[in-house]
Image 1 (cartoon, helix red, strand yellow):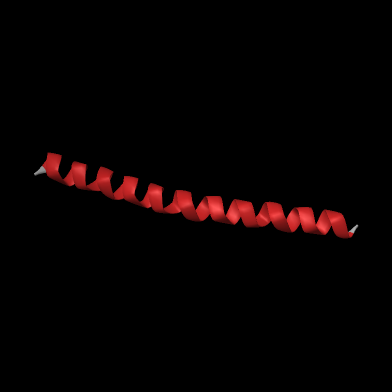
Image 2 (cartoon, rainbow, N blue to C red):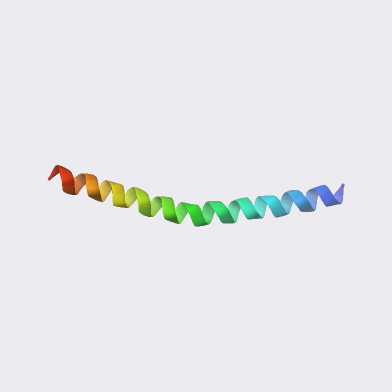
Length: 42
């Protein structure tokens, strides 16, 4: 039973790290898109 808890904890840590890394990329992508839209509309 302890093994399952350790595996689950490891998977959760990997998912959190992936979300943190992708979060920065997605945030930059959204800012690039919004900048492009504001430049195109003006």
